[in-house]
Image 1: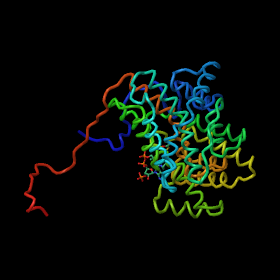
Image 2: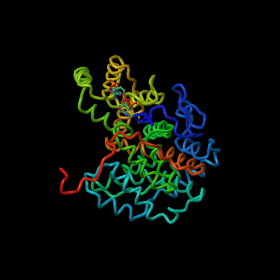
Image 3: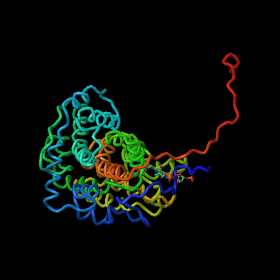
Image 4: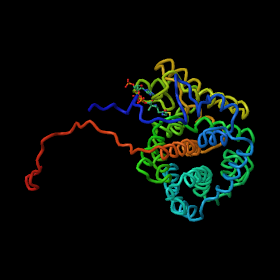
Length: 371
Ligand code: ACO
């Protein structure tokens, strides 16, 4: 048995949800470029769950359902109030989602109807949890979600308690479409492994949140912003990036396991970053990002991934840095749950093997003789 490090190139399942072929990403066969320009996040989520784009009445039905499910149980909000004020935002999300299961009467109901309902419920409740966490740690009361509005609108509204700007809603909505699914990425694989034991959907999503948290995956968008803040200004890009490259440090937001010629989602986020910069009259973050891209692509041949321009986009929208990865989770929840439902439909336990590299033919040494 020979191991493939990082399972690179291993085809671990069949799936009809999203595909990456020759650098082109599709959800259910529709190019991500088309979806980013022409579909809302709710339409994309419906597509992932049901395998087709919704009609107007189906879309209205989903938006209504999301509105009904958006309030989270009071006990979960009370628990969030008990978290230490400096709790990591993804750790808070992971804990709160796990807690949601305790108050859902159908948490252990494995029927397909209940599982789909729980997917929609989680989609509605994640933004409420993240916004409540953000406010509670600042000593503010959570803002109750609105009914009949988009996920993007509701999230921005619940963060501030103010009606969000339409440009901001549109930008966040497009970012959510772009992050919604991505074939067998690490967090989706984690979710599928968990539910393939026939564990419940909350366990699958909790595993996925844990996997997304790491800086080699979803945590990279926050790490990009840490780097931009460390650099501070366009004038310093050259020296800081040269030093990082000389020290063989990884530049966050660059490179990808699957895309070697560029991530098709990055160009949409770059455009958004430029447009938001122009609108707000502050192009500094965008200009720094472009300079970094020129250097990293020029010197290492590495292209920006989905996380790179997300950092300047979310910052320009006024969102706190440590909420970037939780926002990724809001979007990817639609993909995780679509994959979980697909796994249940045609399940087999996921249990690979390991190539053993430890010692052989050892004996139990009596404890008094051990060193
Ligand atoms: N900066 C500098 N060098 C890099 C980077 C980077 N961002 N990414 C890859 N490399 C280099 C590696 O050092 C390695 O060089 P070597 O062969 O000289 O040792 C080579 O490119 C291959 O890199 P691996 O890490 O082996 O590639 P892998 O496919 O395992 O990793 C990954 C892909 C994790 C995304 C990697 O490119 C990385 O760490 N990027 C930075 C973190 C990041 O942006 N993650 C988000 C990915 S997108 C997402 O999950 C949403």
